[in-house]
Image (cartoon, rainbow, N blue to C red; front, side, top):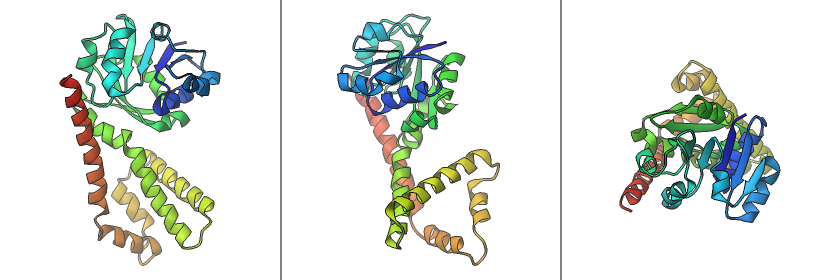
Length: 258
């Protein structure tokens, strides 16, 4: 049984704790300076603590704190070469952290769906242990990427859920405007997004081929797709992703200049 600690139990940290607790196959220590944050996850953990030394006893240590304090937290942890540090800090490279710890450093960009076991996670690092991959796969799907691709991954899967929530809400509101009950419209929209995403993951066809499969000639879907294809929605979504990527690069520059 792998001992895991999560340092920082805000939105993302608590999502990781909840996701890891779903199967009960690990011992999880939650660490935070905020007693209320620890109380919120206490029933899901083997231990909660405000002490970094206690958190540093784990085999795999997740650092889930803000980028501007990540380096100092890592220095204070005093980890050994037998341990793995997993950092989720946007813009903080593995090089920056490797200079501050003896542990193997893995960089992770997760998202909040870790709580339900549906995380899309991107990882990078010189050495990625099988135990780390196994732990991460308990909270979702992970793909290994190069370090220099982490900024765009931060935008695609890290920021991506917010963009999806925005689009999902637009579909819901269209239903409400035409008479659907708001709660029922939300369920229909959310389940449709979920089902469509599952189809993309499980089907060998491209997204263009899947669109065509839904669009019957002279049917309802093709009419809606014509509106989308004549709009600038694709360019707008791409611009949102690129803006998030650029901000990740800015964060990296801020960290390197400290």
